[in-house]
Image 1: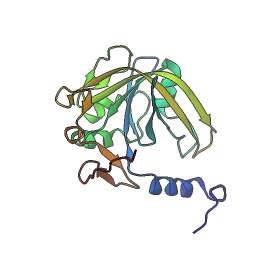
Image 2 (image 1 turned 90 degrees about the vertical axis):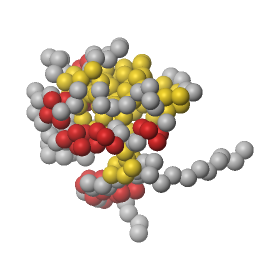
Image 3 (image 1 turned 180 degrees about the vertical axis):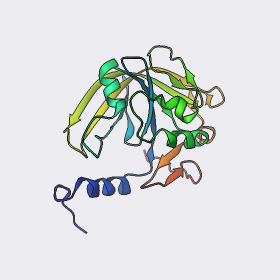
Image 4 (image 1 turned 135 degrees about the vertical axis):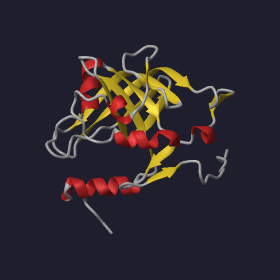
Length: 203
C-alpha cells in the first residue's frame, strides 16, 4: 500500500499515525490557568529529547471540531509551566476520565477523584497518585497550523523531579514497580512491562 498523506483527510492521516507509532507513553499533564484553576489531561504524543539540559516534549493537537486550542496548551502559553505525571496502571481509569472535554472552569483533578500535591518549583499541582512527576518550565512551543488536525510541539525543561521511594534505587527507576501504561490505537492500551525481553546493544 502506498499513501500520500497530503491527499488524506486529517482524520484518516491521524489513524495511520496512531496505528503505526505505538505503543506510546502517556504524559499526564497538569497546568493551571491565569485564575488558578487546575487542569489535567493525558497526551500520548510524548517523548524525551535530551538529558543535558533535561528536555521532554508532548504534542497537543487542535480540537477536531473548530481548530481551537486545548486548555492545556492555552494554560502553558499563559503561565510557562506544567507538570508531566507518569501514568502507571493504578491511575489509568482516572486518567481516562480526564480525557473528556470539560469546560475551562472545571478542575479535572476533582472530576477524576485525584489528589493535588503542591510542586516544588512550578505553580501547577502534581498528581499524588502518580509515582513520577516532572516539574517543567516552558522551553519552546512550535506551532504547526491552527486548523483541525494541526498541533503544537511543547518542549519543557525538567526543573525538578519527584520519584516514589519504592521505585528508586541506584539512580534508576524500577519499571516493574512503575507499571507504565502505553497507548495503542483507538481505545486500546498496553501494559508496557507485561512481556519484555533483553537485547544487548552491540559494541
